[in-house]
Amino acid sequence: MARYTEPVMKRCKALGIEPAVLGVFKKSKRNPKKSNRKKSEYAQQLQEKQKAKFIYGVLEKQFRKTYQQAARLSGQTGENLMQLLERRLDNVVFRLGIADTRAQARQFVTHGHIAVNGKRLDIPSYTVNVGDVITIYETSKKLAPFTDFESPLGLPAWLSMEAGEIRGTILALPAREDYSDIDVKETSIVELYSK
Image (tube, rainbow, N blue to C red; front, top):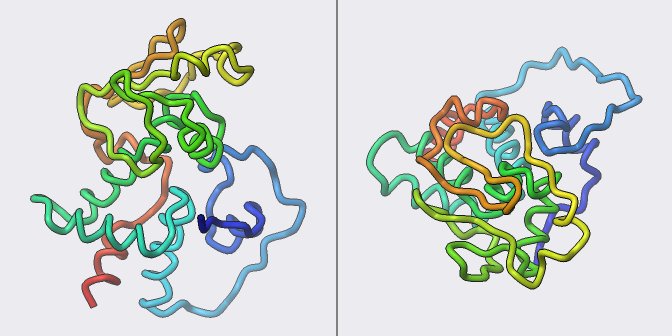
């Protein structure tokens, strides 16, 4: 399975992302270099796409499929794209606070620790729907990452969490303000793909 292997801090610096967005709370000791070179329109659009891909841990083929799916839905393609990325199972596990980072959330899902509506799922790209209930699979509840679980503070409005049970529910589809911590201009991505 392909995945990002470049150092997180290095990639964040190159894309201009705060590492906290990924769940990494480190600070770089290097001073950021300010470039006086003006980026072309294409370079800006490409950077926005790379940001979204890196934040959600999606590679090009899957990202393009998600974009094509978003384009088929009614409404604005850019908002649909971000909504589909937010509704990925690994992202929802991260947003619920079950995992510290999206990479860890992806690992929890692929190792079969997460259940949706009581059914064990090991597909990180699974798209959750309104009313779905995300829990820890019965046999995994005794494992160390889940025994000392504390409810997260900044839970988005489209999710609810019962901390004692480690039981999250999808209340609604995510709106733009629910993922405002992610600084991605989705219109630039749409412009890039529509060329």
